[in-house]
Structures are given as structure tokens and as C-alpha cells.
Amino acid sequence: MGEGRILVVDDEPQIRRVMRAALVAAGYEVSDARTGDEALDRIRSERYDLVLLDINMPGMTGIEACHEIRLLSDVSIIMMTVRHTDADKVEALDTGADDYVTKPFGMPEMLARIRAALRRKLFSPTSGATHLRFGDVEIDFPARRVMAGGKPIRLSSKEFDLLSYLASHANRAISHEELLHAVWGPDYGEEREYLRVFINRLRKKLEPSVENPQYLLTEPWVGYRLELPR
Image 1 (tube, rainbow, N blue to C red):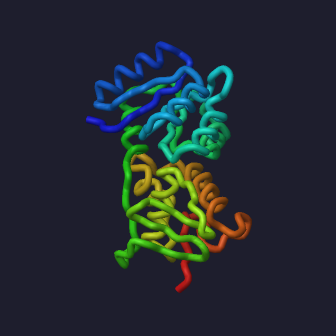
Image 2 (image 1 turned 120 degrees about the vertical axis):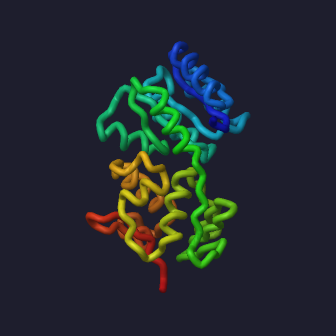
Image 3 (image 1 turned 90 degrees about the horizontal axis):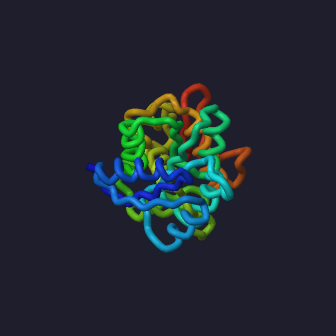
């Protein structure tokens, strides 16, 4: 059975009813919202562990709502949409979503995605250290907190998990498949666009230069590596 508070954001009443019934039956506490504005109001006043957010809504779109949510919270976000091209996926992920599900979907698939999104993992350096510094970046692993230039940096839960896994295997090239398995779960492994987007998001927040990264490096045809001073 699941555990956590989920906000379902969709303008179609039938979808909200079906999702609520299925998620409650799976053990989750569920609220819903009809619009992006309503979702933002709920997130400002209540705490959620996950937002299921439809992209195609009248008024504020799901993409716009995702962007606004990311300014407020590191809550996990799964986008729901009938669009399924790689460009659509990248747009959703680049806005701040953690995952992407194409309609129509079966509830077993959705529940698996939810479990992956809510999975919290603590990866720390093999030395057992609770903190790690490189450049002007400091990671506090137990607190799941990152500072850069002396200022707190907001990372989504999956951004932090990805950074932590790279840090726990610093100076080693890690394959796309290993990263996806470790951070998203065993059902993932082919979604390389997820990693491209998330690494780029991390570089924008942590690197002095996104175009010439010093720490979050790409290993061509292999994966990625966190390069630390030796």
C-alpha cells in the first residue's frame, strides 16, 4: 500500500474521480484541483508529496503550472498528457517535472510511476561523510540540502537524488542505465532524455558555466561523471 499525500490536477471531473478512487484504494491521501491556479493555491497552503499534473488544461497550462510550482516547492511532479513525442517529454521535464505519463494509461503503470517518484534515497560518499564540498557547492546529505555561493539552492527530489548518486561515485563514469535504475527505479533504463534534462538543470544551478562544466561531466556514449578535485 502507498503512503503520501497526492494532488491530482486535471480539468476533467471524470479523470479526477477515477484517479481519486484508485489512489485512495492504494493507500494514498488525495486532493484534487481543476486548474493550475487552484493547484498553486493548494500547494501554498498545504503540503503534498506528489503532484499529478495534466498538461492540457484551459487557462494556465500544465507547463506553466509546473514552472510556478517549482518556484514554490521541491514536491515530486508527474506530468500527464496525450502528447507523446520526445519534444513534448523534454518540454515537460525541462520545466521541472520528474516524470511523464502518456494518456491513456493503466493504473498499474501510474502506481509504479508514483512509487518511483516518491522513492527517497540517501546516497552519500563512500567515505561515509555527511557533507561534500566542491567549488562553492556544499551538499548536506542527511538534510537533503545544497548550498552554492553561500546561498541555498532549491533542487527537486529527483535532482537531489541524481546529484547524490553521482557524488557517491565521484570521479567514476556512471552509465545511463545505472543512473536511471538507481534514481528512478528498476523499471527505467532507456529514458536517456531524462538524464540529459536533469543534468542540464543541475548544471544551471551549480556550475559556474553551463557551456563549460567543471564538475558535472558528460562521458560520451557512456553516461555522466561528477569530477571532484583529487
